[in-house]
View 1: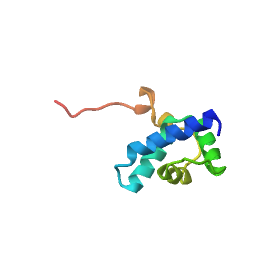
View 2: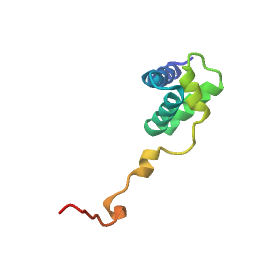
View 3: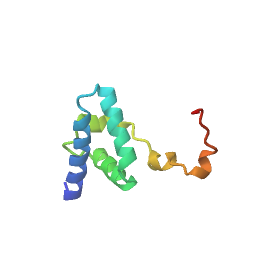
View 4: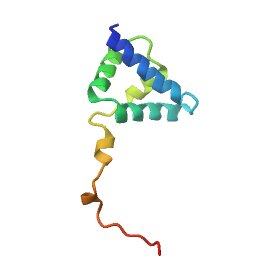
Length: 94
């Protein structure tokens, strides 16, 4: 395995390790959400390719997260809206 591949596996496993205290479904969802939100599409594609090629050493939580990995860009970019799209702000504070 290349150094880059080892780094991706290590980083993905660190994310999964953070979520290990959570119930399995939450750990898988949290790992998947982190990969989608904070990894570049190329990093995700490379990790998916490693998994599909049978790369050793991936945490089972990462493997489960990859099984449900959506395609496309990060949802963070889609969620950001400037004031021109937010509309008029109102407040019921005195």
